[in-house]
Amino acid sequence: MNIYMFWPIALAVGADIVYQVSAKSTPTQLNPFASLTITYLIGAAVSLIVFFVTSRGGNYIEELHNINWTAFALGLAIVGLEAGSIYMYKVGWNLNTGYIVKSCFLALALIVVGYLIYKEQISATKIAGIAVCMVGLILINR
Image (cartoon, rainbow, N blue to C red; front, side, top):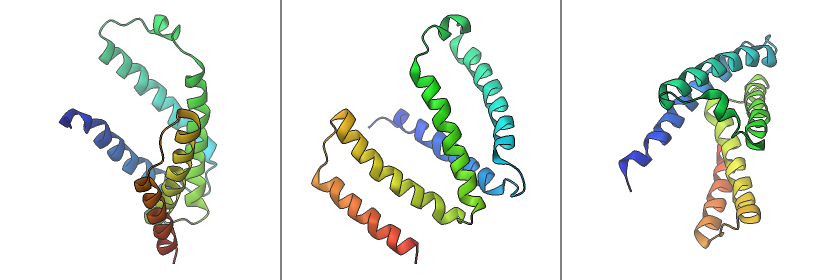
């Protein structure tokens, strides 16, 4: 496996640590959607800057012609993901368990989605992993 395959994982893990700490630290009296408005304005500005830095003379308007339904679905999904995370912490989940519980359920759901939509195989190893996740969920919530 190539070392370059790991930089996106490192980026995602680092960003997710900042994300979870920020979501947990969002003031409880603040409406999460007010906070998310600022979040998305900053995210849009950073995305636009990174587009120009990484595309070396790319035409942003021309790129917009390549947009399909996925950009809109991702936008809706991100709002749900982030609002769900903020509310998860508002209702009392701890940083060290809430994310793990959410991630286990997500992994289980993605196994089903992968099988049904993308025809990915479910092996005995994956079934064992599901069992370990379920045992982990039981243990983590004791």
